[in-house]
Each structure stands twice: as structure tokens, then as C-alpha cells.
Length: 200
Image (cartoon, rainbow, N blue to C red):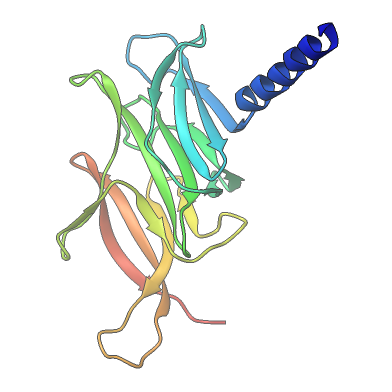
């Protein structure tokens, strides 16, 4: 009987351990994301096929958890280097945002920019808008998968370039590769132009 009880305890401990260790921290970054407040930690977490962003204070208390970002890890390019998570001021207000990318399929990836909203007292995604198409998204999108992050580039001038496909209006023609550029204006990343790229 004692042996059985011990076996149950060991089994229970292993099961508990597997549950608590299923989530994996993919990347982390810290900074003063909230005005007039201490630095906080941003962590990109994967649990199975689910990737989310979690922001915690210095004591480890959870301040924010995002909705689903994607299913697989994805990197972008910042300052000439590939990264999947960064704390960087993209809006020019002196307060950094959290930038995170994830692949969500079937061939598309998203770059999410999270900013602290003092009025709502919470973190929100900065939208991406296409004025001509009257389209708004909660992320910047690339449907050209590049493992080195060259399909998502944040420039030194804070512009964002995303590689993607331009789909023709006429049926039967193949989509072409292009670079979509965005600039932050009036609370969102606004599409500036689409530059066709030569196919190799």
C-alpha cells in the first residue's frame, strides 16, 4: 500500500510538472513602456501552437497578456539585425513600444506593435491602415516568408517595410512581389506606397 501511495505521488508530481513546464519563453525584452513608471518585462510565450505576448512588472506580476499572435516563431529586422521581440520607440513620442512577430499561416506573418494607452490604462495594438482600400488591421502583414527577417524591416527613420504579394485584378495572372512601406501618423501605421520588386 505504501508503495502504491508513493507511486501515485510521483505520478502526480510528474503530471503537475508537465503542465507547468509546457509554456516556453521564446524571447524577452525590458523597458519603460509605461510613462512615469518603472521598467517592465515583455515576454513572448509559446504554449503548443499558441504564441502570445505577456508583460510583467519587476516583481513578476502579470500586467497584460495579448490575444493569439500566431502559431510559429518569426523574426523581423531592426537596426540591421534579426530579432523576434524588441522594445523600440516607433512613434517618436519618447516612450518605447513592444514589437513582436509571429507566423500565423498559411503563408502570412504578422508584426504587432503594442503601445500603452494612458487613458485606457492598458496595452493596445497600434493599427495598420490602407487609406485607398479603406482597410484597417491590428498588425502589419507579410505574405513572403523569409527566415532571416528580411521580409519585415524597421528602418532607422522609423518607417516599416513589409514584403508581400500584389494580386492582379485579372484572373489567370500570377501575383508579383512588392515592398509595402508604412509610416506612423495620427495613431496608426499608414500605408505610404507599394514598390514592385523584380523577381529573381
